[in-house]
Amino acid sequence: MLQASSKVGRHGARDRTLILLAYRHGLRVSELVTMRWEQIDLKAGLVHVARLKNGLASTHPIRGPEIRALRELRRDYPETPYLFVTERGGPMTPATARKLIARAGELAKLPFPIHPHMLRHACGFKLAGEGQDTRAIQQYLGHKNITHTVRYTELSPDRFKGFWKD
Image (cartoon, rainbow, N blue to C red):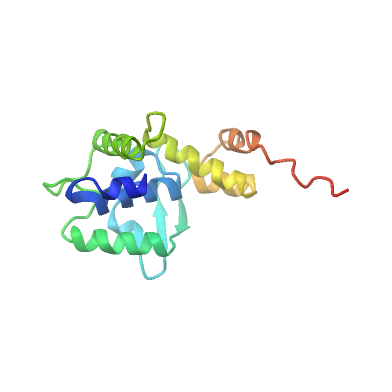
């Protein structure tokens, strides 16, 4: 999806960065489009994630690919307080983000329609699949109630792997 989004129109870098951050930080579409530059510390490599839906805010590290993408985004749109903006300089709407993510899924030739919340779920499943602690995933995704997080670990096919070493 990242490669596919880069090839669409003149906002490929913006769209690729939007998908990258949505996936790596498990962002809801509304959290994504309201994200502001004051939440990003490129020097320290941190992003403050303000969760909606009564979720828990947290600070996440950002790595090289994200830092490079964010620097490019800042160069392309230097005059806006928002990370993801329209051609007129206003914040992107959730509907626009949904459309561009769906379009990236189509261009990537995925066999099913993609919506932004799938990137959030993919983040949770990826972290659980790597064996990350469920409480850590809960904090990372901003879940107040761990029952929302447990679904990612329950469905992990390798969760019993290594229980016995015969």
